[in-house]
Image (cartoon, rainbow, N blue to C red; front, side, top):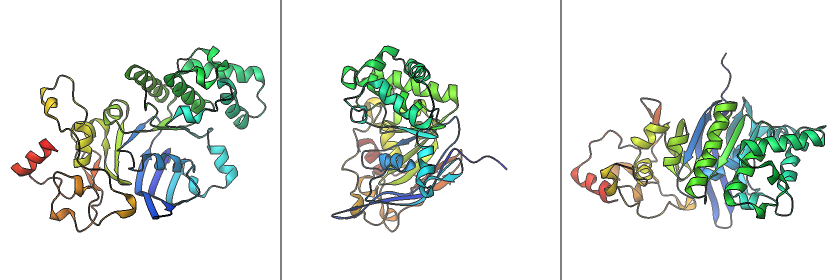
Length: 336
């Protein structure tokens, strides 16, 4: 019998109760992360990425209703009792939140905030041991151990993000969920943070779920990519394939948004998609991407397309995959 995957998400639905009605943020998502693997999740704001991340560790707000399975090492996190869940958080699976500025306590020193996780999950540690571990963690993310004495406001944005990564590693978790860890960082600092995350997976063999709106970043860092739109998975497959040769029109639009250096054709890449993602409270029937899709046709409207498996470990949810494109459609693709 083979060991279970590190993280297995099956038919996950997350719906928020709001004053204007039910808001389905995640709709039937399936996703797997194995040990030593980085899986990326891409999509625009509002597609359900952060809701997915928070639900993995049951951090969603009280107005959320969750169904499905989130299995960590074969055990469903959604059905765990509080004591079991507390043992999994930080020690088994940890999360790097999107905004380090809002995740660090402004009135406590960096070292004290890292030490808190160590004391909670490793009782009996002496202060010398804790201090040594904090110095080790800061060194692993490229920070001077002296930064443990600093307050958050004394650090740059990139340094704060590295502190968040150090905190996530404090208890040697098997899984790290990184929710937009490079948002608002300049290109040089972004590259340094991504290098830290990549080294973490290579050196420790942990699994990582990397969430980002930037498909080019995920293509460089990840083994596989899942593309979400309107709370659903619309494409999934090997990272290089999804970025270079996407099957779904939405994944194609995300890929085309990032010009390839040295590729003259990239100068004529589409400027972007028209319109905005749909309001999850008012989803029309059929394909939710159809109102923005350059290939939309009547066949797209009767029902929402299912995720279909193709060769090379790829899957996509589009009824027009494999159909030849007319000259008019090719022209729309070019000018979308």
